[in-house]
Image (cartoon, rainbow, N blue to C red; front, side, top):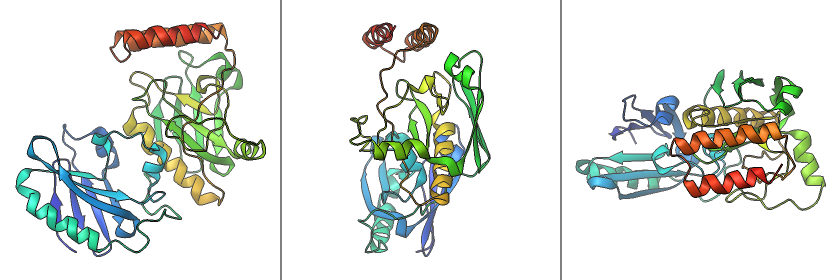
Length: 308
C-alpha cells in the first residue's frame, strides 16, 4: 500500500501486510498513546474500517480489530473510552479526501476471515519488565513472574496477613482489569485452579455488565492477595492496562486453555471493620475530589456500612 497518513495524535504508515501506528509524544496526546509509542497491526488482524465525521470538522478513520487479535483490547474488555482507542485516527478536515482513499485501500485488503474471531493474538503486547503503583501495593511483571508488594498505608489486613505475593505466569488462567476511571477499579490475577473450580462448580453467577459469561464469585479485590486496587491517582489507564495486556499475552502464550479477561461481580462476604473504615475514607477522598457525586457517595457509604 505504501505511504503514510498523519493525524492529530498519530501517524499511520502503511506497508504491504500491516500498518505501523506511531503515536505522537506531545502534551495533548493521550497518555496511553504515549505509553504505547507505536504498534504494528497486521491487516489480517482487522475486521472492518470506517470513516466518520469527528468533532470540530475533523474526520475519524477507525480500524476495528477482530475479537481476540489484540491483547490490549482483550484486557480492556470494552472499557476504553473513545479518546483512548488506539485504532481511531483523528484527522484535520483537509485530510478527508486522503482518508477516504486509505479507508478504501484498507477495506480492499481485509481477508475472508475478517468477520471471525482471531485464534491467537496478532498484535504484539507491550514489553516487560513493567510496573505501576496501585492504591494498596506496587505491581511488577518481568515477563515470567507477577509480583505484588503491599503498602502499609493502603493494603487491607487480609493482604498484610498473606504477605507480598509472587505469581508465575504458568500458574495463571487469566486477568481481570476494571478501569481506574470507574469506581473501585482493580487488576486481579486469576489462578488456574480458580478457573478450573469455576468450570466444575456448575452455573456461574451473573457477571458484571459487559463481562460475558466468565465471572467467578470471589472475595472483594481489596481483600484478595491476587489483586491490587486502584484509586485517585493510582493505577492509571496508561500504566495498568499495558501491564494487564502484557501479562495476558504471556498467559496465552504459555497455555492453550481459555484465558479469562473480564471483570466480575464480587461476592458479599463480611469484611473487617478496619477495612470498611479505610474504604469509607478513600470514598470520601474521591467525593472531595469531585469524582463521586453526593448521591453516589451516600449510596456507597451506606452499602459499606451495611457490611459491618
